[in-house]
Length: 541
Image (cartoon, rainbow, N blue to C red):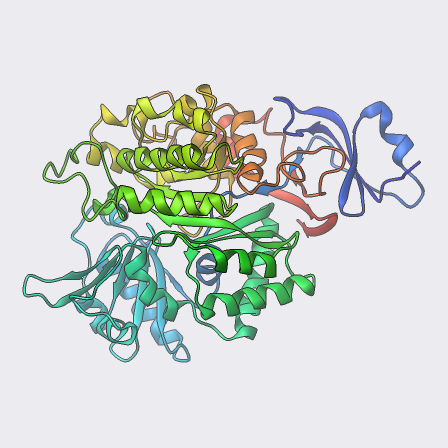
């Protein structure tokens, strides 16, 4: 008879295998779940050496798995190496925050910031380098928009990163004034990469210091798995960073499992990905597959739509899609042929359709390859494309908190009628799609519960209806499952993560309440009081 090292007892255990919690316990042996027990079975797994945690009526559930994050960008944003602009309500207010940070951090050779967002500035005109040049005249300054698709740079940053107004880019663009001079705005990932290589370059010991702090924050929020979805290219700067992550893994310093996706747009030879995958592949840090960006975001009119923007009828999206149909399909087919799952950023309904078409073409060429391809965000979708997720075996990877974050922006950009299918969680689930939830951190914080609340209630932070009142709500069980098992499926790890079952890895959290008995508005305020990852306690409130 095997006895448990740890027994977690509660009147509310949500395993993710059913729709309701029950009273019992979870037995842990080493780094795995030994058994999930009803009340009358508990004693036979307990010895005198078993640690017993009686959680009362606090809910026990699988560790939260964030399906979509930007790990390193987020870790830096979560540190004191960046100024947080998310609370700014205007360009002027953001500038004051940047000035204050720069004055308080004379040791930083670059001034980095993130979180400014047009919707928070009441759709004022986008900023330019002029105000940033005045605020930071002596150092390069890089300010990443919350949408992760727009950069705001001063003149020294433009110069340091090598930008020119007419530079050739695979996708994306460099903003200019009417006279052709660069205005300090950079759009979309291919263009932004020149800047981000400077912004996120730190020496190894500083990388470790930043990641250690980030791991503590993740554990406190019950996030036991996450991803690096920035589509890192095949350059030494990224390889060197991965080697530092592996060192931390070897030293037992990773308390959340990291899943990396490398760039696929523009490539049809993925030998380097396979080489890196072999080099970096453990339980806690691995190269998983490929990621690409097909469009941008509707906030700056770079989301690709099937019909023109309601408030800009002259465009269906500026500079998008970011790849031709032929190039996209060639890359997807080659990636899947190499045994690599592909994840495609597609915010607008036109981009979603194009991604589905590419995945369908890959099946025609490669056969039923069994890989989990994924579309990221799907903020708006044509109803004709909803059944195709199940038909093609494509996972819908979405972020609940993006709905209230936008402050009804989609209604303004698309119009009320087309917003019937904005963040269409219910329609996708009813059509048999697998849904995976995450945060897109640092676009929003890695606390998963505001996003779960948004998916269940379809409400803003203040309790008002978020976006169109379109009925696309999930049940609590569906939202929790999307944030655990659904995300494990994306990572190809549903056999070992995502539910509380015997034999699975012991990634378990305890909440401060039973969510199934709490009022709906309480969901967003939920706290984690205990986190276990790989059988070890990584956080205790």
